[in-house]
Image 1 (tube, helix red, strand yellow):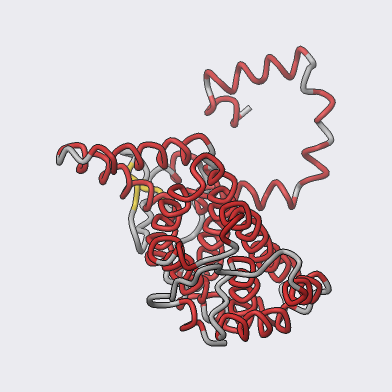
Image 2 (cartoon, helix red, strand yellow):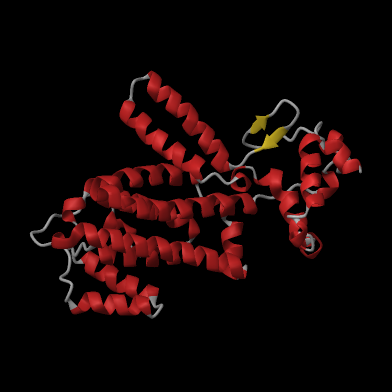
Length: 316
């Protein structure tokens, strides 16, 4: 598919887009509802080639383009949306309901993207295996930059109504972060040091992450891309304040506070919680057998013991 149709400068016409009663729009929507996304994208592409720049057609086309081009093409998809929002918004239709259709169409597009990603991941399908094999082609640095520009452009057009769409994009971004973590090649177990037996021994281990490590004094914890990005944003916040760039600082503060409000330690420090999560699953029945005892006085007393002296709690 010719993504070039959405790149560069787009011509501005008197009445851009399609009327809501146009049978061509109904045909594209019907194909999409029936799961024939490639066909819906092809019809949309033909109309875009004729200069009909309607945000609904654009989103049908972009989803088909992404399905055809692969996971990494989400970057080009976002760059194309940015070109529309930031450079060519007046060329986009339908003119009389542009913002409302932008909101609905982007919500549909991002839900379809995430749904497809999660579906293939859940099935561990052949397509999922292809994605994993080509994981290095997913440039998260560039995707994050494109996402930040998109959020700015969307806020300009939709103001308060942009929050729903930016939240949808955030879910896709987090899925991509996790995907890359899972796709990383793990070290050969035979080359790894033996697992220490005690908590004291584990405290002496120092893991060196490929990207960065967060030192606690006793332990260096391998951090994920989301955590590295958060640290980068914290440093950037300090820098722009020093430079008195208050609009950028306000935007960064909002973004950082959102990350903190939705902070999931397992996403930001996946290696730290990897063994904990795995052992919980493997011992699910044995652990849940105690669920009904958690209000008993003896259980509560054990909780207090754990709080004040974990070493003796483990030994006894």
